Structure formats: structure tokens, C-alpha cells
Image (spheres, one colour):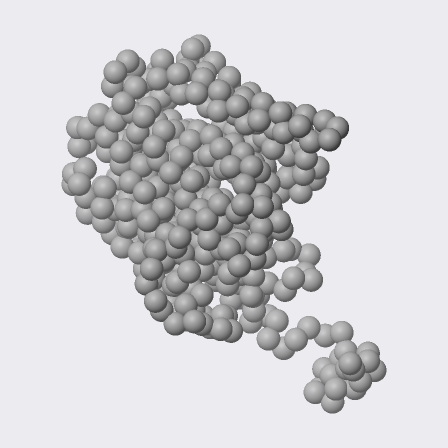
Length: 418
């Protein structure tokens, strides 16, 4: 193995000092920034419709249950995309998949611009779902290959902020534009279209980062729950899934709550509530690193119960403040549960099935994002928004308490003498 002096001699002969960064480092940083931006704008496009749903409902004449269905088909598109194309960037490379994802984001913005009825909105949401499914794996892998592991910022952190930052900023940006612009259903999509087009040009001009490609073979990614961490996997999925259910319902009906219950017509305010939820989800994933592994899931469950109580209170007293605090607490708890679950899979499961395990984990979460939102839409139709929100909050709290009791029982069993 060559020593430090040998390496220094070779570096000096190459014409650069021993501790200088590699000549391609600035190019790698630029490439990482391009990928992160494409990741960010693709995810931003998926939450941009959130503050616009009340306007769509008024213009197209559809009910709250239609809003939840429009939202839910996005999550269904994500799950289908993950299962069908989750390994695509490993097979054909990161660059073509990133190009396809950002191209789909451009197409989704164009379809939203042309939308004149519910059917077209559904098509746009499915396209958004596929774009999110494609970009998530490809961009995360590409950032891992572009961002040096020994730098101050980890690749996973860059991917996290591009992902959750996009989800958070998309709804806030669209809300602000809808309030400030004369055409609330066109201006946000024109801006999203321009930004997505910039992302498309960027990734199309970037270099391939995958060193090995297996070649394309189509098959659905098989679901896999790792037997060695089955209990922890299922508890993490249930807890994070409960948090995702709240995120889904907040995304689908916050505008409806603010408009019909609080009589607040600000699209920016709707965007702020959802922005808070997703931003705190990112923060929770960072926070989990500072919590003992044995305490992380318990803390997440307690947070989910508190968040459910705050959201139920917001419905009962028709107040914005507990809704905003509840969104923040739910985001933190969801992020902690999500970080704990992914950490367990990546460190404790069989490496041969790790990719399938991660795909299964996210398939569960995105299913939980979609199905409860439709259920709340049915409840709103049967009763009204406020009791539907209270019932939903009680179910979320019950699910979190079930996980908490399961954890307590497991620890008691482990502590019992043989």
C-alpha cells in the first residue's frame, strides 16, 4: 500500500499540491447542485396543487370527496412507479431516469395548465406520481455518487432537503403565486413549468454517475419484509404510516378547512400549513440521529398522539393555531419514525434484500398517504368536515397508541428472565 510520501510525490508531479481538491471537484459540486435542483422542483410540482384545490373545486364544481380522490391518485402513481421502476436507475443509469422524471414533471405542469375538468386533473396527478417515483431513487443514488462522503454535508442530508424541501416549498410557492397573480390556476403552473424545464436542461446536460449498469429488464419489484427485523419494520411502518396519513389529509383538505370553517381565503395560508408539516418532517429525520435508537419510535408515537389531539382541537374549536402546531408536531414525529425505520433497514437487514425492503417500506407509507385521505372524503360527505377530522384524528391516535403498547410489551418480554 503506498505511503503518504508516495502519494504526495505523485500529486506534485501531476502539478497540484498534496492537499488540493481533485480537479473535477468543482464540476462534481455543480453536478450535485443540478441533480438536487431537479429533485427539488420535481417534488415541488407534486404538492403545488394543494392550495389550488378550493379554486379548482369552485371552477369545476366538484365535492370534497373528489378533492381527496384527486390527491390519492398521486400516491397510487408513486406506489406503482416504485414497484415497477424502482430499480430502473441501476439498470440504465441515473441520467436517463432523471431526464425522464423531470420531463414528466414538465408534462404534469402542462397538463395542469390545460386542465378544464376533473379527468384531466386526475391524469396530471398520475403523471406527478410517476415523476416522484422515478426521481426519488435516481436522484438519491446520484447524489450519493456525486457528494464526497468525507465532506461536512452528507449526501443523505442533501437528498433529504431536496426531497422534503421540494414537498414543503411547492405548496407554499403555489399559494403565494395564487394570491399575488391575477390567474391563480395558471401562474403557479407557468412558474413550475419554467423551473422544471430548467431542471430538465440541467440533468440532460449532466454526466452519468453510475459506474455499473445491469441492463433493462422489466419486472415488478417484489415486496419484502425482512424477517430479521420484522417487528421493528412493521412498528416503524405503522407509526410513519400514521404520520403520512395525516400529511395526506392535511394536503388534501387544509384549503377546504380554512375556506369553509375559518373563512380564510388566503392560498398562502394553506401553503404555510402544509409547508410546516413537510419542513418539520425533514427536521424530524435529522433529529432522529440525536435520539437513542431504543427511544426514537416511542417518541414518535407520543408525538403522533399529541399531533392528533391538536388537530382534533383545531376542528372542535375552529382555530388555526392548534392546526399549525399540530402540523409541526406531526411532521417531527413522522420524520423520527421514518428515519428510525430507514435506519433499521439499512443497518440491520440482509443487504441482498435491502432495496426490496426499502421499496416495501415506502409502498406502505404512500398507501397510507392515499387511502385515509379518501376515507376522510367519504366521512366529510356522510357528516361534515369537522366531525370527519375529529374521527380521523382519533384513529391516528389509536394507531400510534397501538404501536406504543406493542413496544412496551416487547421490552417487557425482553426484560423478563429466561
